[in-house]
Image (cartoon, rainbow, N blue to C red):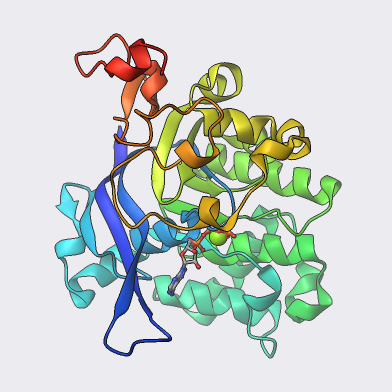
Length: 330
Ligand SMILES: Nc1ncnc2c1ncn2[C@@H]1O[C@H](COP(=O)(O)OP(=O)(O)OP(=O)(O)O)[C@@H](O)[C@H]1O
Ligand SMILES: [Mg+2]
């Protein structure tokens, strides 16, 4: 069952031009993303820094207003609701942000952090709130002695657990975890990943897990969406992506160590900048397989096998849109 249907979602920022006051450059950071989030799954969103992962997540929660598109939840397009109409839906979605050390008010104790989140959700009396606060701590395996501590008195892993507890205190249906383990050492990272998997199973949560870390993604994800320059360029199950990746960019991510050694694939400014027009495969300037055809036509997001899609001309040869140049090996 589809929990959330994202349709052609885009986010454009206008950037001031230092040299001309009248001209503003448009930067398309999320470009017509369509994605179904299935109930009870962990969907991972991967891609290199600056590819638009956080912006997509924030746009889904309307923490930044999308420029266009639809987000269908329980049959309703959330983007058509005004702020007041959207508010009751908002608590069903929570986000754990990057950088746990900046996520808390340093003057609040752990008890106050959790109690405030619980208050937002339900009209509970003081005693019930205290009980619920303890339940939340227990859920993320933190001892109740921690209630009187301040966030700076917790380790990075404990802060991350507190973030998870605070997000869950609102009893959300859908949780977005943005790089939840990037600042943690290997052992604590495994701990947090196990916690997320357990919570998914115990509470029936649906998770969007954003990460650079393909090891962590392999551990937790049911499905994986690969993002490049604001677009989803490959989508599939864990075995599709780790066993049969089709897009050269996905393969590059999976073999990043090998590619880093290879001088011809060094990343340049041009590689990282967002394209101004939609007239070619975005990955063509970095792709060792690219042909003239790739530089002049956008690939379709084609089905490779049930549930597995990729946007690469090389896998579209047997379709009606057969690119002659590809077939001819240009
Ligand atoms: N408020 C903003 N105004 C203008 N540009 C922005 C704004 N927020 C983000 N961007 C740009 O959008 C692009 C995507 O940023 P985003 O934070 O979504 O990337 P990301 O994939 O989450 O990267 P990372 O892995 O480093 O967290 C970047 O080029 C960034 O500079
Ligand atoms: Mg980010």
